[in-house]
Amino acid sequence: MLRFTRLEQPKTLEEADALAKRNKLAPLLGSGCWLRLAKRKWPLVIDLSLCGLDYIRVEEGQLCIGSMVTQRQIEENEVCRSLADGAFVKAIHAILGVQFRNMATIGGSIAGRFGFSDIWPVFLALHGQVVLADNTVLSAESYAAYRERHIIKEIRFDLTAPKVASLALRKSNADFPYITGAIRLDNHKYEIYIGGRPGIATKAQATSQIVAEEGLDGLPMAMDKVKEELTFQSNSHASESYRKAMAAVLVKRLVEEVNV
Ligand SMILES: Cc1cc2nc3c(=O)[nH]c(=O)nc-3n(C[C@H](O)[C@H](O)[C@H](O)COP(=O)(O)OP(=O)(O)OC[C@H]3O[C@@H](n4cnc5c(N)ncnc54)[C@H](O)[C@@H]3O)c2cc1C
Image (cartoon, rainbow, N blue to C red; front, side, top):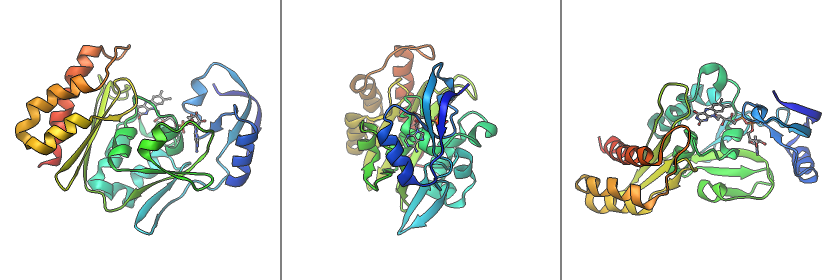
């Protein structure tokens, strides 16, 4: 249960940003699906639901998704559905059930930078951008490492995305995935991202390079390389060695998927 002493509900993003900067430890509330799992009682929570951030629009060839848009709204939006032949929406669809996706926000999903995220690998592969409340624009890669206090205003994607595919492996539907991945194929250049190691998705640089240079013939080498170049660990969902083996499988499946 989400417990707090005081709830602020700013009516504009500017007001929310000022509040967030004055109260650096107060959590920003998306849907609270994740926040409510915390055992503590917060002195103050800043609810973003009245700031007008629940829009999906196209501006200058970019798809702009406000941070309070729910995962389900994205799944149901035609432009989002067509992005990269449905790769973005496919990643979201794997998360729990419709009732949950009707609540969970894209802002909370990106800001959480969850290692198990189904969304992060494809967000990276699509070269997504994060726009902060003060209109600073960060690439997905820079945002993954961004540590300043901030509010996400929206995320953005170029509508002319190249071939992108995403996959995740989980023991059963509605469980957390134990390994996730996405691939981008842009003019013979491959980018492969692997998450759930259990760390946040990251680029498998050398693996991507092998596939770019050797094509499908280089797959056995790439499958070995991914186990060596990224770090994997054990947790309650999978062991380190199982994750390594499955990351190799993921690389094979992702490369094959963008080459059909
Ligand atoms: C039981 C459970 C199972 C899950 N399983 C999966 C899964 O299988 N795959 C998967 O990908 N995800 C999974 N998730 C994560 C889920 O998809 C959402 O990403 C998560 O709930 C966060 O969204 P939220 O709206 O609930 O955010 P909140 O709980 O409201 O916030 C999460 C964090 O983001 C911050 N935040 C929220 N909005 C903003 C903003 N606009 N700007 C800056 N910071 C912000 C909050 O302060 C907080 O730190 C799971 C979550 C739960 C609770």
